[in-house]
Image 1 (tube, rainbow, N blue to C red):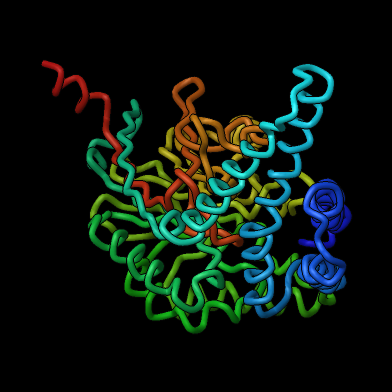
Image 2: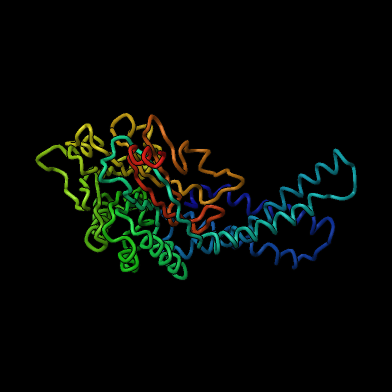
Length: 411
């Protein structure tokens, strides 16, 4: 993780302190050499810390405390100094070449913005990451069996369970309570249960079981242990351990390019029945494909295998971790009327309606529709980085309706 951006990080860390040292300590305040040395000690420590994390073979250290501490220091101290440096430098340019005054207003703006960034970061790490929102979505379909009118699905995704170690376990418990309180007919989980290793799940088994026992799930990009440098045999063993944890310990139904039939009375039928799946008027199909991502994310999907045997008139709900697959694969390759995805976390922040994930992903959060077929992308329930700003952890309750139901209510 750090290795990918190590050079920009070091430049930000060093250049901010260098600017402050040269522009203020030497030029204006005449700080003594030993005081300046004390100023540079934290900077040197952060450079060493950065290089140490960048040297790790894996995406992140096995003990995430090291990474979380680094991110804490980065956001609390390096970030505000970088903001101050930029605004002070811009203020110097304005003063020297435009206003020709003696006062650098960028200095004061930088202090204010630096303080605000400090406060915002503290908020995002604590209150922001603790917030949970239950969002209700009502969808109407023409071919939904009448017996499923009012059927309630809880959609959750991206737990990144290792992040909830320590004091954050209380947040996970509250999330599971929120899921349980919805009394849904079905719980769907669309991937990224772990951060890097299936061992993260062990200490949270009972908490997850109490909130999501019986869920139908698929795997996300983090669930393939792609972020740990291991040989193919070890990766396969970890992948199997994760699916075994979900199936045997949590009692989840893990769909690996498969589908199941849900009957109106709540029973599930495995793939491979004698008649075409979904041909009955009292059943729907839950179809789940492995992650279908664009590079650098893995693509393990097999839509032909997942949809084999599904009747053409069946009502199909597709579970796919990566929402970019909706236009690229789901719409052209399947008849799924509703697709549920995660992956983006909605950027874990939103400022004036803008999310950073909008730069890369067309469908990054919320409900999307094309020709009567829908995609819902949830904001997720966690994150590899424990920070959220104006984008709470989300439990989505999707209620299905038939068109007849809607017409009846309009009379």
